[in-house]
Amino acid sequence: MSPSEIALSGSMLLAVPIALLAGIVTFASPCVLPLVPGYLGYVSANVKSRAVLGTALFVAGFTAVFVSLGVLAGSAAFVFFTRNLWVQVVLGVLVILFGLAMIGQLGFFQRTLKLPVTPKTGLIGAPLLGVVFALGWTPCIGPTLSAVLVLASDSGDPLRGGILATVYSLGIGVPFLLLAAGIGWAAKSVELIKRNIRKVNIFGGVLLIVLGTLMATGLWLQFTNWLQVVNSGIILPL
Image (cartoon, rainbow, N blue to C red; front, side, top):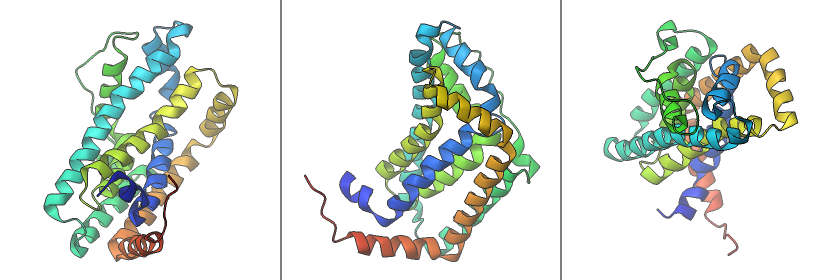
């Protein structure tokens, strides 16, 4: 399937905004948002002129990990035929569990993996810090990333998995970059989110539960197939 065909597929039209929203919810989660100033100071070594570049390298680090996982999920799905009805049920139940974990249930999902790595501050250590961030913050990243990887496995296409993982990474990374650049409204938005952080977590959890329910009942597959038929007659302007 070509990139344009993937972009117009029914499931991608739904999965892309969900992946983006999942990334934003991850950024706004209780174990990421309060640490944002520390991350920004670490990657820039508290030198303001380096903040944006250091943050971009940090974002590139965790994006590389997420995209690799997305491609792997898409490749694995090709082998395991994830569009099988019973496989969809199992994946849907898993997404529901991820949603419950995000709300605060299922305590075993709340453990944080501490990697034995301490990157250097500044530009040199920024990409490695991004990798450590991607691999280590399982309580907040795990549920949303896992749901995105389930979406990535929907059609068994590595390119699709890479695209969704990239969109998810943008949902996390763009707010980091806006704050590093000193955008005023971004900082005000963060303060608003901090005051309502529990509500954001509940919203993200409910979103995953709804998505998992749609997948487990087969409604997700039916709706994406319907969108595929609707979009089959669309011709993109060159």
